[in-house]
Length: 444
Image (cartoon, rainbow, N blue to C red; front, side, top):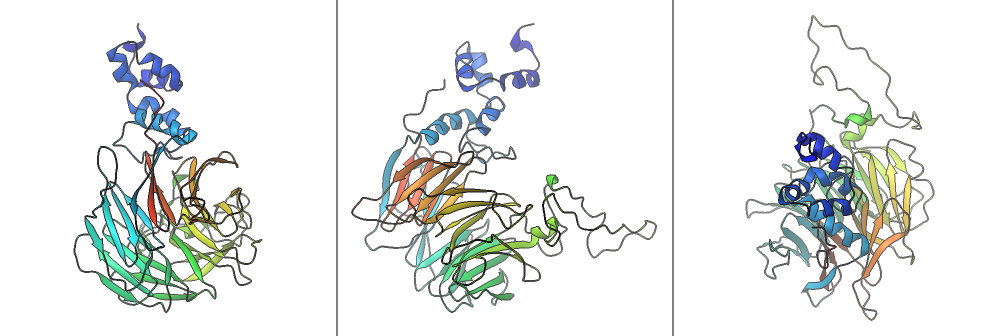
């Protein structure tokens, strides 16, 4: 029997053990073999070991519409720093812009407005004319977040503006006395943090905050756990957490003919202190990052329903080591960065007094922003000279760096976002684009 007369699943399993160079040589044998080797299932194992291919640590695919073979080609350039730099948008007054990338649309805040720029399908270049402008703030927009149905922004005027992405009428929420430095939204819930030292919990349907949490320090960042459930839904955790779902919905009694379920003590993973909340409680939680100007940890975990602090992260923070950005990569893995010049990874299942990994800025600059690919890569923006760094989580040293501003004009990277082939970074006077498709390493 010839090799390519084997059943498809057996053939794909065999090809998945070949390396990139061997697959490229094999694809030159014939057209039939080229079509077989070009399929995503053959490249998935290779792609998981590279940077920014769209294959996450849980084997999910972020960019299923792009051939995985093409993404493996571009991943070589991410690793070696091969790209074409441009500045497609420039403006004269210095601003504090923020970015969000949603498919083929780039959202950029400029002063009191948020502009939506389409990206060209073929080359991903930005059209200079926005297709839509979101307004409603009298002062600069500090942060904004996108959901499937809404764009929610917080401004230095203390207002929160909720824009429906399907209608033209925005709705304003009044509640903060000073600028809204951070905002996040999931499942019809909005959480905002402000310089007025409070965090407020809102719902999309309300006009006043549901809860007000005093933090006694300026709030710079906030992140909602990705498994946040709507009130009334049963807890939902990944299977690896080791928890079994309830036999019947909460607040609903069991059937009369069935025995009542036994009540077991909370399940704690290894090395987790028993005074920490159980894992299922993390579903309804969010994390706040403060300026660290008080004798309190800048990172605290809060229960959404009770508005109570359930714990803090870290024990040794320098005074003034505020947390400027944070993101959940999974329900248990939290990344933070800020003025202490470190990117830190926290595993919420383990001891919260010490982070599990950290990456230090080599030039002692603050980290203003970051994003991960869900697998091995971290992209970060520093506070001086528009420096963007690429990190491989499997090593502590910086993999690649790009200086986007000139030596005469220094600007922080206020925000960055990336796709499978492009990285966009917002500085004080320009939006920069790095195109990693140029000079792609040949894989036939």
